[in-house]
Length: 202
Image 1: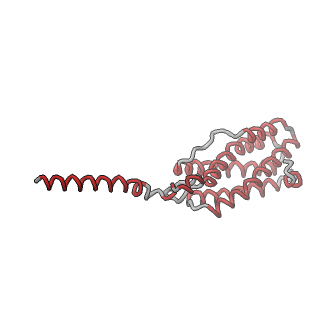
Image 2: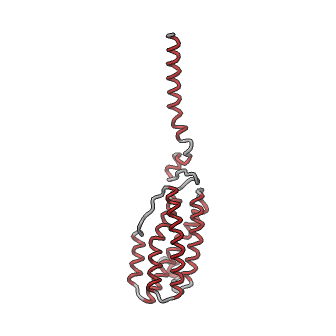
Image 3: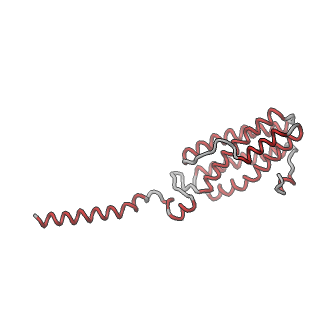
């Protein structure tokens, strides 16, 4: 009997040790995105695929775009006398209302925290619009929005091409189509200073 108890004790100790050593392995087996390199890059695994830092950045930027471009579109609808500007503003209202709904849903699914107000630069854009009158308002409005859309357009394409997350890829595809539509409508206003935008002065 003593020999049995001793053997049982040894077996129990070995079992406990093996379980303890195995725990780190199986506990992370379903989280392939938490490797050292991925943690450093800000990537986490989700059921829709890895979510990278650039993926999260795009989600936040899409949300921020809606937070200032929707009020900007409302300003144009209320203050502009240009049918072309109002037509472009209508496209912004429809496009960003839809995108905002989509991005909030995606952010909830992926656990990405979203801002609730425009950033400081975007608030400055809105202030510039508020300070402008008449034709100056139309030019200021169209140039600020055309410049903002032009700057985010390459980032959208890069994320769409590189992301391995299906939700982010679909959001990038939808955003790409919306931004292209908005750029096209803004150019039709005849108010866009292409040279200023190209030189980075707008």
